[in-house]
Length: 158
Image (cartoon, rainbow, N blue to C red; front, top):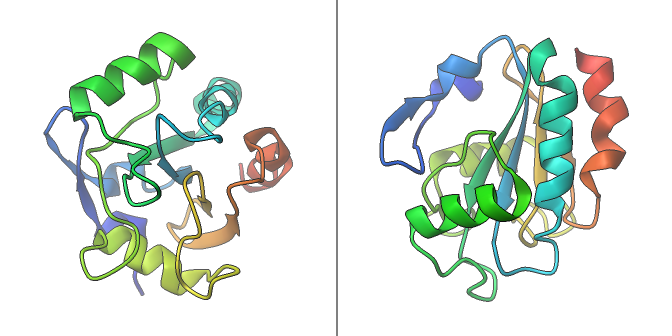
């Protein structure tokens, strides 16, 4: 059975990351963008990281430029923007596609595990996938679901 730990991703600094490093944790995978109406959700995501990080929880941010070109920067620019404007210290990864033939395998799997309003497709930036300690997808939240609304779901899994 496939789980989060079966995937690898390129970190925002260019290093290859084995997502098996997050096995045994509760994880929130989010496709992000720096120039989106939902960009202020970085603040709420960081709050979740701050609140639950020491209890075995982490946010994994995957910048994506597939929706209206709202993530045009380089990886260095994205990392700087997130740290400077929102104090982000949770792991960020290199830009990925979340839909289509070039979608990162992680997002292909996430979409298959939990479809949304558009079937399997990710609707927009800041779609969130909650993954349990067993590495399996527990829930999916649309872009309009603010991170603070997910706290109880995280708490239940910790």
